[in-house]
Image 1 (cartoon, rainbow, N blue to C red):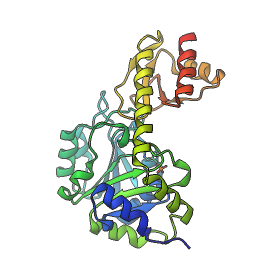
Image 2: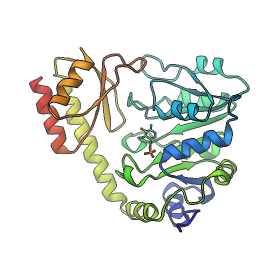
Image 3: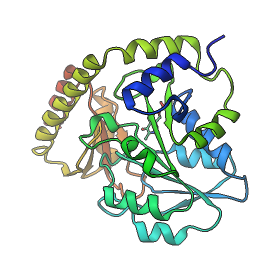
Image 4: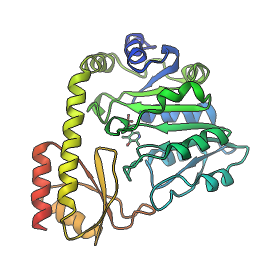
Length: 297
Ligand SMILES: *Cc1c(COP(=O)(O)O)cnc(C)c1O
């Protein structure tokens, strides 16, 4: 059996991130961590959570699965949280507010000012989902963990660390919050192979840094090309490993790219995202192919 407390892995994460091991909970991907947070802190059919579309779809899926009302407050047109409106929809049963920063699918991160106001005024737990933090120049909210007892931060090895297949999600919070989550987690939720592979990966921080730099380099290149593509109407600022663009006709452009063997995300049905496409930065070779095809179109 694997170590149910993943002690070796937590030691490395604790040292690298300057937190105590008791402030870490690991899960089978951050999706499991998010589910545990719902199950620990929300009463089905009674409580509600606040999410800010357009954002990561799993918050809404997990709210439904757990029979928790999901109160949605749209982001502003520049994809920032509307603090006043959020605090207006809150009631005594609002237990969790989900902030995804950098946000998926818009790519921007939320202003410090908005996040601080929400941390200070929202009476429930604030989850900051930092799945894409390694691609951003902004600091992680981890540095502020001790300032806000209601703050939970989730991270993952699925994006910048390139290990979506091993399923390792990380949750940082106060010792009190982690102790509650620990009580309800399945004992062997992180298998031994995952723990070993994660340890290996965490022991090569310089290599990971290099990989992230090259993704950011590719992002810069792609952004430069997109400016000159005639059907691209808007390029949204990004701090993630993807770029959201507004085009003339998202469905048409999506199909054209599929026909050329390139699969991107069509986000046109998401609120505030009419006619948008999300392009993930690939390898240098994939990027070249995408650029070639965009120019042809
Ligand atoms: C991909 C993603 C996750 C899921 O990560 P896993 O650890 O693979 O479950 C969580 N949040 C956001 C915003 C994501 O884009």
